[in-house]
Structure formats: C-alpha cells, structure tokens
Image (cartoon, rainbow, N blue to C red; front, side, top):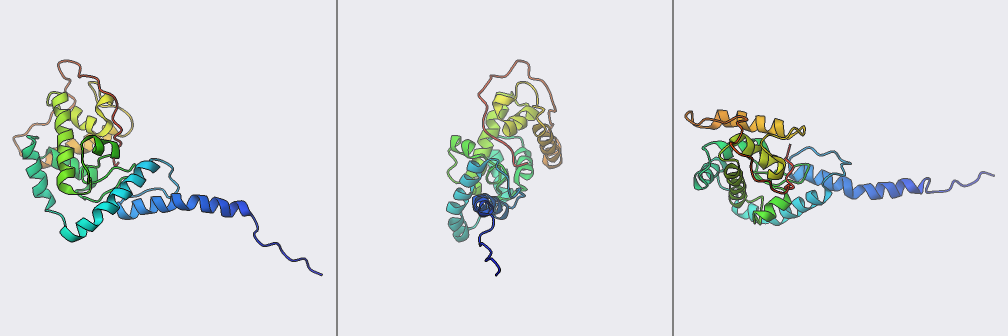
Length: 220
C-alpha cells in the first residue's frame, strides 16, 4: 500500500515568497510608474519609494484632468524668475529626469528635478510631480547652492546632488556625484547661450559655511 504524499512540501518556501511579494510589488510599481530600472529584490530606500508612489497616486487624477504645461518653456521661465544662469536648470533637469515630470528614481527621488521626500518637504513642494511647483522648488534649491558657493556652478551642482553638507570646497568623490557633475556641466555647455561661461572646479576664495548633510541621493 502506497503512502499518501503529504501536501505542502516546504512551508518555509511559501512563507518566504509571501514575505518577498510586497517588496517585489513595490519595486515593480516604481519601475513601471516611475519609468526607471529597479532591482526587484532591492531593499534600499523602501520608505522613500513608498512615499513617492503615494505622492504619485495623489497627483495622477489631477494630471489626467488638467495635463501639464510645455516643459521647456516652463523651465526657461523658472530660470528667469529665480535669476539662474540661462540653461543651467534645463541641463540639470535633463540629467535628472530627461524632463519627465513623473520620473521616480530607484532611491525614491521624484519629479523633473528628482527631489527626495525630505528635500521636497524642506522646500514645501506639496506635489513634486506637478511641474510648476516642482521646478520652482528645484530652482530655489539650486539658487541657494549658487549663493552659498558664490556663483561656483560646479560646487552648486555638486551640492544639489550630494547635499551642501557634503561639499566643502570640492566635488565629493563618492562614485556618483563627480559623474553627475560632469553630466550636468556637459549638458549646460550644450544648452547655455554662447556668452555664458561655466566655472569648472574653481575654488572659492574662502571656505563655505558648513551645513548638515541633506538626504538627497540622485536619480542616477
């Protein structure tokens, strides 16, 4: 007489799969709605990614009804309003999100300027996926860095990526920011008016004021 085979097999396998399901679904949602690449089993920035998806869910109905303004015109208008060098915000947004208002990064950065949740909150940007307030927040943040580093574009762009507390007279060599700065300055050289000069790695005359680190990873 043959023994009946016990059903169920390895219960811990089912438990493991159930535990992984929310993680996989979260990363899939970020990849799909944020138009980015995210490893399915990534455990990084879970809270930030969940926050970004929640913000996107709140934004989407309004977006479907009203649409978005033309991005390039909006960027140029925002640059002028905040007295930024012509083409600089445009270059930064091209590198950050390819000018896509709904971009979500693998770190949970949101919108055209890829604001992290903490930075968006600091800048009082309630909807980081709405291009007008999102770009206004990014422009204000970039203008703050330009003022902090006395107009040094290189250091200001580095601070936008790494946080001003991590930029002390030079571009951080952290495996990300130095490449980010090169991309933005290359785009800026292409997009700026011919008469605009770019300062690359010029040292400020005096040490900048130290500030606490800002939680602002890039979209990458």
